[in-house]
Length: 286
Ligand SMILES: NC(=O)c1ccc[n+]([C@@H]2O[C@H](COP(=O)([O-])OP(=O)(O)OC[C@H]3O[C@@H](n4cnc5c(N)ncnc54)[C@H](OP(=O)(O)O)[C@@H]3O)[C@@H](O)[C@H]2O)c1
Image (tube, rainbow, N blue to C red; front, side, top):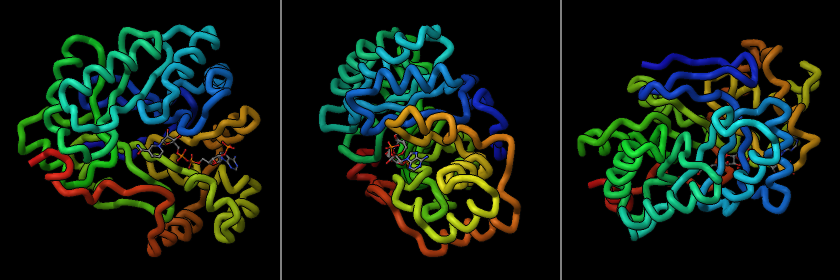
């Protein structure tokens, strides 16, 4: 059972169920395109230790170049990447992983995720990734956008427990059933889109709390995730925002305001896709 792990600095970590140590805070790089190496290098030099990329983002090479540009040692950075589930299953996933490693200029990726329960070949791909982990190409294996039904299906198939489940999490998308299941089964919860893709920066409730605390709306949203004990990976393609987005550790949102933020979840709203309801057939987990 994992309890809430509240990050107290950019270097706070959690020990995953396979013993791998993972930072609790990082940079998401979806849609960080031409300036990806610069943004990644700047983030690392400001103390970010985790970078979240994916095959789908088409910037694994930008992340690799950014790490090189930062001058930091590869082993000091924790890279997360994801396989986009396809009909190629086992063959496809290994080919994609090898391309990922080449792009990252690394012999391993720290955490590799099945991007979503779709593509009809998740069990087959997951089995292949378990082998890749034994070969040292992956340090830790996890999933993303898995609902409780998909997590239970992995267990029923006798497959290794994922170390992490990455899901959409912000005040309007709290996915409590998945969070509770993960915590009961020692799977670490990693939230994505903590800023709701920037679409709630003007929200009056967020603005009111930000004013009261003398923080920005973005900081309030990111702090909400930190305070809930989620690993969080706010994205920015603007170097000037890296520092303020990470300035969320030496203050807290008072309980009464957390209650107000939590109540926003009573009217669920998503800023992106939601594959957590896909069928087991669609996932290939029957
Ligand atoms: N597993 C999945 O299916 C999945 C899905 C979505 C995302 N993710 C991961 O999660 C990461 C974060 O999620 P996300 O990219 O969807 O969205 P997000 O982090 O919630 O929001 C990013 C948006 O907020 C803006 N922003 C950043 N800092 C800001 C600030 N201080 N003030 C105002 N606006 C600000 C960004 O604009 P600028 O770039 O201009 O700063 C961008 O438009 C992704 O990059 C990706 O790594 C995973």
